Length: 176
Length: 245
Image (cartoon, rainbow over all chains, first blue to last red; front, side):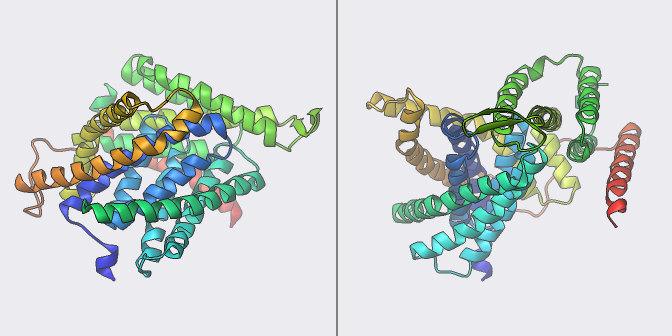
């Protein structure tokens, strides 16, 4: 079980930072597209977040998932990219830990396993963001819940499929 | 005394204090006072607000976003305008202003904390918090790699454009995510492997501890500031929690 949850070699630590930066760049790219297409839902951004949270855990396990999440949230805060950056810190850490706990118990060979792990991540992460939407944006809790549920639903399906395909191709490429 | 002279732990206490105030303050007046204190502190410690110019643009865009969200979704107060399914209530604007002020305080406090210390100071602060150096040193790595990775992503976009990929409208950008993102991801994984190998060959992680060229020491004014700020945080949290019990 420990082998499935933890990995603390240099490759995992450095990989977590570098993939964390990739996650940050892609979050900024998708965030800008979302701001034009769906400013209140952030479906692309949510999917991108869930995908990277899952992929990093599958590639480098923990604490790499937590490190990548913290890197992403801290740079988001430092650049003023989002006032929810403070809540991203909790969303990223909790989402990553939840993904680890679920994926550690499954073989992750089937699409259903990826969807299940992603469901836990998307729900827990979006709950943290929902708190941010209520406290920072002063959104009504029902609106915040609806927005978070929609993002979590789309993120679970899209990111689950994406994670399986990209992780599979990374394994075949022998880059890991 | 410049902001950079303060210990990073003092800046962390300031950051926590500001986040605490932004989350517990409920009215626009309270939030305005907190924001004013933050701006004054920036002026006193840094002499000007020039470095926050970009932040003001970001906050204006963000403010517009919050205003649109509140105008569409707010259902508090009395109905003042209706056009089809769009209903605008009287509380939409005050709530939007409160949201913008909160966002402003958080963003400014974040920029104070994260841009006023060097990566080495952050590393030393984490070491003081008993984080193993193998993890603490990743701060410097992330600061070093951020511009490199951005440049790499831009070069991949340019390469794909040269092959005929259109990246003009938002829709084009959406369609262009996969052709640009996948090569970026694979190159990043390869770069991570090569960097890790280079670091191990230079002795990273060989011993449990290591020395640094400088160290952090709390000065008297740091101790006074941290104690004062922690006391304010404890008092404000207690005053919020006690009535609930």
